[in-house]
Length: 292
Length: 308
Image 1 (cartoon, rainbow over the protein chains, first blue to last red):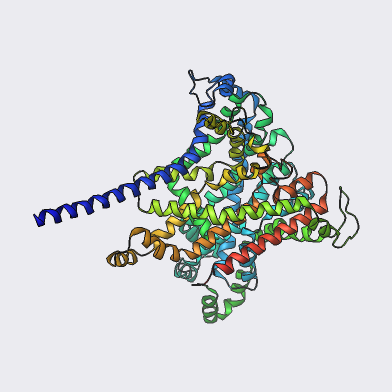
Image 2: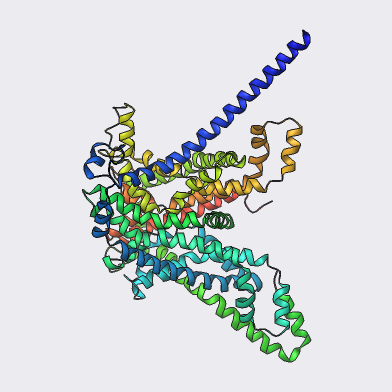
């Protein structure tokens, strides 16, 4: 009898433990789902609405489309110059990405390997450059670009983006290079190899993880930048993708279906690239942020 | 790790080649560092120096005028719009440190237990860092639209009639709160930073705590969070500095309306530039720069970043 009571009590205890465990994991999922929904629901709504007619968007915002209205997408491509904008953004991003990686790699190598007077000052300046809000100086930067004869040109934008991305790229590469043992280079130099050969043939391939990080950072920066693009570019043919997104609201004044379709087209490529290279992108961005 | 010493020692051995080698090193240094140095000088140092110098001059159209001392600064400290922008920047920073970061940390602690589907959650949380702020701003313009917006449709469906016709961005009470809500729940990057750091904490610490009978909540509170002090400080700098840079979202969503209630410094500088108030825009720029510097300094000091 006594034993049975004890068993019962033991069972009760286990039962309440299980209740706690279930509630805990339930709360966990509620929290996770809340944050996911708040991010995802607006995006889903845009995708669904992009297949609806203007009338159904205006009268029943939460309804699903009865038939898929692809004509919104046709309208979106007709009204905006999206292919051109994609091309411009690809040119700017690609060029500034490669320039940035090359210049940052050379500088980071010398800063990591040689002691010279400017070394500490440069490193300190780059660290500040990352965090200080450089958009406080939009006017001087615009004037400098114009004075250099690079106003309203993609080349100006490429050079500016390359420069603005340099501090973070240099610091990420430098902190990686410091962890690469110098013995490899020493033996190559004793064998009579020139520095150029050493850094481009031996060290550059070794830096792949850090290069991946700076490429992710620089890609997202160039692809998504808006303020400086708006300051520099005045002609419609030279608009980058973000600039044309900025003009969507004006262009689709009453055509909401077209607006949503254009948004889907504009967002989709970046999202697809992200989902394909997810691990790389997440670890790259995380590493880049911590290095600051 | 530095190989200057290596050169010094090796060069001693072959003295004949010393001069030649030294020249080679100097040439190498100049060629590798110069491009970065020149670009940094043109696009960081020169603009900042110009910014500070021109803030002391009269400069209202294309031509720069005479020296006016601190006149612009006196004007700035009496400018109610500047005050409003400062207040908004401050409330942004407070929300970032006391809401945004705890959210991210909490979600990271949950994801650390690897619940089912955690990778899908991670992907969704990360989307706002892939899709541009510009695109999100256009989307939020639609979400908060009074006539066909998602929010009002949901409120209407829930029967909350009082708010279901609200014009959120043009309501003086709600506008700024709505703006804050557009980024407050986008926690992906910070969550991943926290998660990476939590994973680095040695498992032995938790095992010892478990043997002593500490619950998992207690373990998080007494082990994980204290060990994350540095990274919490770092994330605070990131979000607050990001807030000081934030521009395009506000430019597209409200452009400071209604009645300057959603003005922030970065936006105000741009508006002054478009009004051709050049030297005043630069004065505001100096203010933003100084604030950015102070914020970094404050967080580095208070979280003792860089010390072990």
